[in-house]
Image (cartoon, rainbow, N blue to C red; front, top):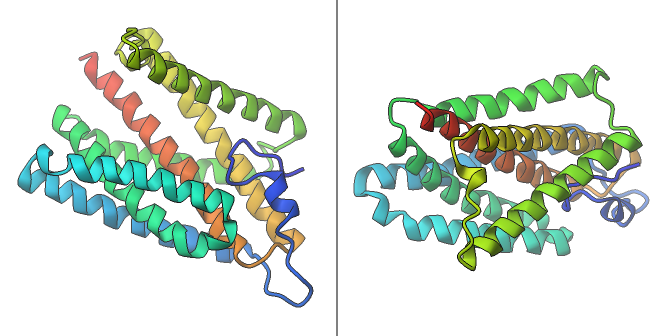
Length: 249
């Protein structure tokens, strides 16, 4: 029932996390509060590298951007494999990802200063978040077994394309079609944004079903982390999509 394409919110994790009798259990409100805290920590990290970019130039944020990306990935792996550490490592993950997002957002803003794509990307990300939440709560989009399977397959396909593109470019192959302001590049980016958006439905369902099943209280941090993974992916893809549109002008 709780299968999801987000590796942080898997059915296996669900089965192993039911709280012991008498222990505090996961709640929807608790998950929302912890997600909000992680968002604030991400914004704090992003604000630092954004302001540093503006005051000192791009050279001064490259280390922070790379360190944030690598550190965030390591933190994510720690949380996925040691979910009991989520309440300690998830805030670190949020700050590190914020450092990366602030730097990359500043680069995009410098490339398209007249477009305001960063603020538009932020607004669209939260707009999609609330729109998908409303669709989920209204029952318009239901996370059925077929829906889950479709989103999982699509997400796996995107991950495979990412992997092939990175490896091919490392060996000198010119697979830049995903990053060009062509109809194909824009179409691919739009499809990825849609897939990332649909992953939010699975994240919402995991949080709701987890609270109903009485998962351990620590799973609020874990669920908040999983939702942040999807939100960060969605923001990056929306930012890239807006940049592709701006590049056509």
